[in-house]
Length: 303
Image 1 (cartoon, rainbow, N blue to C red):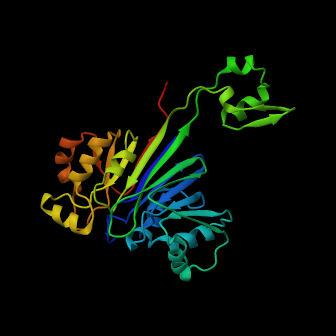
Image 2 (image 1 turned 60 degrees about the vertical axis):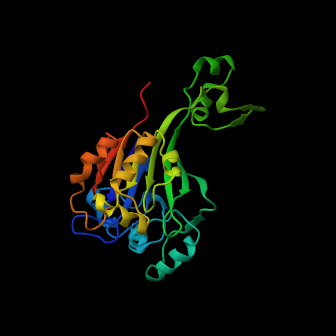
Image 3 (image 1 turned 135 degrees about the vertical axis):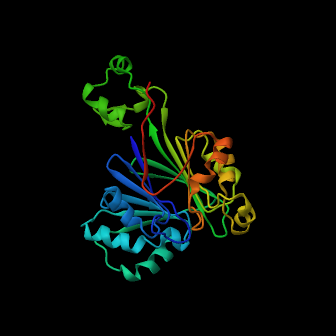
């Protein structure tokens, strides 16, 4: 099961009722963040989730509304007596940007591992998450993220017995481990069927609509997409600043066919995004306005 919480749904500036952009997921005891705008710590506390379990933070880009909450979060994690390494993933320049921000958080009791994205697309494996970064189209280098939890094939007891595999090794093989024992090598593919459908969440913000977004979001369980402007008359403003409208996000979802669409990263001038949702649902029916604290539990399909 993957827990997903949209911690902050605002763009540009925090508001009394809307924190800046951040997404948090939890899987198998490890938490992951995408972006860390102002208010992220408060949103985590309001949700009742913990700081110490955050092992990976991904950044879409380095505009202030996406990273300005990081120094304070690092200090809080340090005060929580974290000693395990923290992995940061982001566009090129990540270490330089974070080092500058850490002028106000110079001493931490845990090491930071920097992983800078190389090229238009790159995949990372972190604590059970398969993270795929893909470049989008903003006025600075910016990436969307597809977060996937893979699911191995079903364990075949009859094949395991026929191959004379000791029962004590079954659980390790089921977890994907390759084992060498008593001069024999046991492989997961010896006892597992075809891989089953996993869980997929795609997060994308600060971009014009481009084909790669629909490709990456194809058949996702949840597609969280920027909707900077709900008002049709602001379409040209979205083009000029390289953002997206509700309508453009809806058409991406129509192509990608995710199970559900959440809109996020609203302009401060957009007070009531729900007023524009009828037009969005006319394009893609299973669409919802994101809001701070909006949460879903995603589980593997029943078979």
